[in-house]
Amino acid sequence: MQTYRLTVDKFLDHAAAWSAEGIVQALPGGGRLRVTYADVRARANRMSGALVAVGLEPGERIGTLAWNTRHHFEIYYATMGLGLVCHTLNPRLTRAQLARMVREAEDVALAVAPDLVPLALELAPLCPGLRHIIVLDEPTPASAPEGVQVWDYEELLAAKGAPVQWGGFDEDTPAGLCYTSGTTGEPKGVLYTHRSNYLHTLRTLQADAFAITARDVVLLAVPMFHANGWGLPFSVPAAGARLVLPGRDLDGESLARLMREEKVTVAVGVPTVWIGVLDWLGHEGGELPALDRLLVGGSTCPEALVRRVEDRLGARVQTSWGMTELSPLGTIAPPADTSDKPGRSGRPPVGLEIKLTDDQGVALAEQRGNVGRLRVKGASVIESYFKSDEDVLDAEGYFDTGDLAMIDDDGNLAICGRSKDLIKSGGEWINPAEIEAIVGGLPTVSAVAVIARSDKKWGERPVLVIQRSAGAKTSHAALLDSLRGQVADWWLPTEIVEVDRMPLAPTGKIDKTRLREQLESGAITAATIET
Image (cartoon, rainbow, N blue to C red; front, side, top):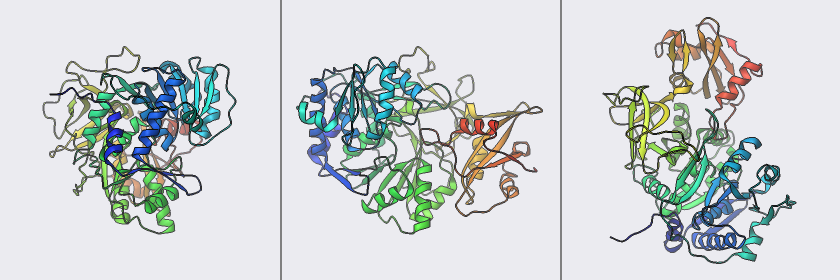
């Protein structure tokens, strides 16, 4: 058989040759930018030539501080096709965190959205290896820091762009770098290879996974800097589907209008994004008749949200579980699944192996029906963190995810919480995820979190934090009644906090660390409830 290197540039090559579709980008003010994959491919390839012309070499890393736009998509392929590494940075992290990542990655250039130019200029003096700043999307005046050259993307493309040969290197060449969210410690780098991204793309395109076809219009509401963009910058063009990019505007109104006008069939994002869309539609009215599926990940999707989507929009909610270290897809519910199993995250597509172990790493004798630590392995699963000597694999090559999970009789995975989130009260463990799943199923609750609060007698006690659904009324006693008989009495929270809006981590998940800090500082107050 022929040697056919599995490099990601082939996805855009294929789309350019065989698909009449392309990218639609939302512009400020309601306009749209439309460009075919053939044009995107030509522009990205010429940008590769421009990067060579200014002195960048294969293997070097380019950081991106950018939103979901055509230019960001082109930078993905301009860097990876050339053998550079695209290091996606989360602009919502602190300056200190970003500077540490840029230094550790030894980024030689930053591709930056216009509104993030001030942040890039603050980072430059802290990152001595930085030589170039490329301003994306629209011309933005910026004074060049000492030793750094500032380019406008379109001017750089016009002045120095030239066609170059893509690929031709080993498929194990690094392609992308993404850091974990840091919600349970310092962020760690995950270095993706061309081979891992290619095989991950094939896994996502399976009929019981993302199942994207050339007939689909896909809205990417997941930031492209988050967990490899969930692999969508590769899988959508690989399938020849239309890709809709929302820019920075992820509010309910902007997304609802975009989905309606572009006839989006598949929309991808974290639960909090869809709560905003539903709230706006509930207030303003209107439908999304073309929408077939919402693909949800990032955190467990509340049962109440699933019901709202299905009842209000007539669309199916496809739940999934993954993490940055997995590229990121782990398990996913089939698109045609209509069974009523709240909290399920589906099964692993072929190419990923999972097992449950005890705390010592010994595989559970019975893998189904028991809660254990979730471990995974596969061609797109991390082997080691970037520039780290930490041993993250067990003797059989499995990676410990840090999640607690259960597999039901049908093989569906249910995430039961993070092992670090468990609350130890009176020497016994309380699992916040079980409480959250029950309370989150109430139609009166829009979002829920359970956090630990230190207690002199018990060590720790659970505090229930809720965000009510718009216009909903419910008593604290009713919230507790929903838990009675479903969890042990000593699990019942004795304090409750109501917030107007949950604080979110940079990934869009509820930020429990900030909730705990706010509770301890008195920024939010808890009311005592009788159990």
